[in-house]
Image (tube, rainbow over the protein chains, first blue to last red):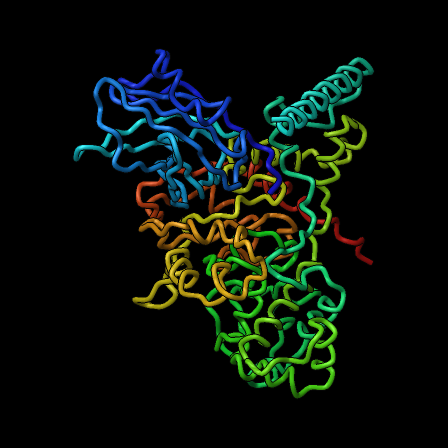
Amino acid sequence: MTPVRTWRPLLALAAGLGCASGAAAQACGEALGPGTSLVENSGYVVAYRTEPAPVAVGQHFAVAFAVCPKGGAAAPQSVRVDAHMPAHKHGMNYRATITRGPDATYRAEGLLFHMPGRWDLTFDIAARNTTQRLAHAVEVR
Amino acid sequence: MKRWKRIGTTVAVAAVLVTAAAVAAQAAGDAPRHVEFTPAEVAAILALGPPPAPPRDPTNRVSGQPAAIAFGARLFSSLSLSSTGTVSCATCHDPARAFADGEAQAHGEGPGERNTPTLLGVAGQRWFGWDGAQDNLWAQSLRPLLDKTEMGGSLSHVARRVRDDPALRASYEAAFGRAPPSRDEVVAVDVGKALAAYVETLPFPRSTFDDFRDAMARGDRAAMARYPLLAQRGLAIFVGSGNCTMCHGGPRLSHGEFHDVGVPFFVAPGRVDPGRHGGIEKLTASRYNLLGEFNDDPTRATAMSTRHVAAAHRNFGEFRVPSLRNVARTAPYMHDGSLPTLRAVVRHYSNLDENRLHADGERILRPLGLDKYDVDALVAFLESLSPPLPPSR
């Protein structure tokens, strides 16, 4: 399928979430280079960018991301990346695999948005027996 | 981003050109012969083309090679590959019927339970078969040779026929540059790859809609006006209120994935067709998927979808969203061939019984609630996705 769709980050989603703005947030993910989007909650900042960018509907893409604890939060023990469409109440048909790189960076591969519309890209960060979810809405056109 | 900007520019130019032509036509007192599409609708319409060109397949080392295509064409009509010598690929994929068979359900060596899909434009799909049990065209081409209800053969039978038939043997040697090896499975997979090389050469036919879509891209009002007004109104429903492009979008008019659309999947009392759920099980168990030894792409980058596909409970009863290109020539419809006409398909979605959906909470489909005029319009649009029929004598 010709990649004719694109997506753009929207506002962060869930209550308590917001686009990161502090110095710590700005520093997060510097190793990823320019073009990252930031999302944070009280415990973590996630900086990410997709490869390719923009993402085309029906085409696999990867997410390069960094997870930065803040306010004394523990370093993540594991992270998971997923996505779902709130309006349709379904997720992706693919499960991303995660590999860890240097400097608290990760790479998720195998994601695919198979329909146009709003998708919530989610980062589940597990540490100290709890899991926190950070989500970012993207619009696939 | 550059690509999107280029497409966005094309949409803007098309919208401006179409609008300017409309103003000029109205100033001249001409009656409108087209639907006024919004910029968003223009973008959605332009995204439905052009028809995708058949791609080369990096997982098949003989893809695109003339000798393999010729061998595949010979195999395609060869009855000797079936166990009884009475069935060929062309029995169900009849070239005179758009490479389908016109029957509700396939019948080869025995009765099947699913509708025979067309082969036109099939190259380049991510998944093959109604359940997506194959992730590549050569495995999909090999599968019916071994299925007891289709051609009923076996790896050894296929290999023996190639070794023992002088014409097939010569064609094999021309295509693969060697004599058929002793390992039956290798010969049979090569047969699948030759068949795939041939099937890849069967493109989507250019449709009446494609002419309209390209005229819109050029801002060619006169050419657009040759597209029937009823089809234009159906197109407006398709990309607008009907939201059909959610699944039937892009140049292929399918996103290539799987959904439950409320078609019953009982195939016999107490027995169901599991659809995608069973397809994923077969895919992961197959020796011929793209993670296996027969993938000719040494990088295995082509196995991305297979490596990451996720099975879910909701896959039960889901079937692959078919392309709508040339759809008027491939009746009957749905995975079980249960709907005989395009009008029946449109009415199915218009009166959809949501209680029949087994979507595990998924909320995509709603009854369209079309009136008779809307049904006529959508049918006219769907019919325009095929080439015009030759004039009758």
